Length: 378
Image (cartoon, rainbow, N blue to C red; front, side, top):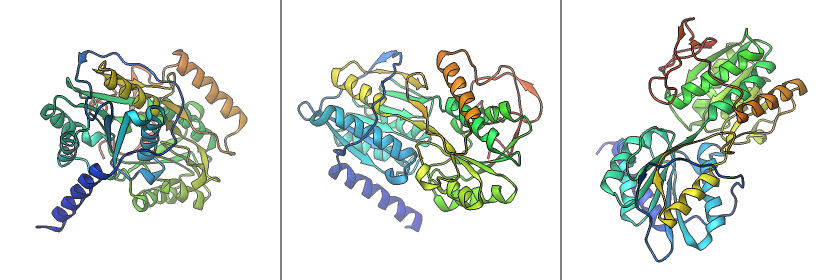
């Protein structure tokens, strides 16, 4: 047996052990109001041990990352806070994406979990297959675009927050070179880079955004090295679609500025901090659990936004001036009331060609807007 196979077996054994041992009874979580979603096909409700709904969360990284997985875990804790003994929560961390994650989803279903959340893009097809094999279990997948009778999909308009943070970055740069450390060239990441760049160039048409791909969601040394490579080329602001604070720490060491992601990470690089798009998953998780308990859950593709509170902005750092804050607040209000559109249609791409905007949520959105340096395909 190869070393990689032994590692996979060890991961799966750990996952299954956690299924037996873990339940979420920590405090914490968010308190903003939940949004809605139009369902189309009814699916099973959860039964289980008496009146207890067993819920499982599967994360691609550690919940201590203070980033993506941590934000989802805060949402799980919010559900526990609100529903108490009516729910039992299992959390699995650092489960690799790909076909082997199907085994994890199916083991969770076989062990009696009636509601299973998978919080990474690469879980989409494995979860879809698991859902087919366990039609009496409700599955929910984050960030993708596929659904079935008993599998919903959910995400939020991070591009709204991305655009607003682009305004802060465009105003902060003096070199007109902004670096962007990005994980994988999938639709959510590409449209985030495009939205960010459009925000940058609203306030600074001469600025460019250079992208470096890391091929990882959570790997602090790799993320830090990628940020440093951009700083060495002259970038004085670093943005990111990553799960750790390493890009910001590299920016702070270099005397540059930083736009984070997922959560308020000010504490890790306070001198570099500008702001970040941040998530509030708790209300959606609570609403979904309540629907499963009540037997009213329906499959849907839910897409939260700034209007319903799923997407927000982190507090501003000291380097964001009053005029920029005023502009961001204006654009925020316009995004929420629908009077401002982030993506024009048609739109100019990085090669200077005008093209139809198309579907920004699928693999069709595999191109960059004008002002981005780098390949949109990795």
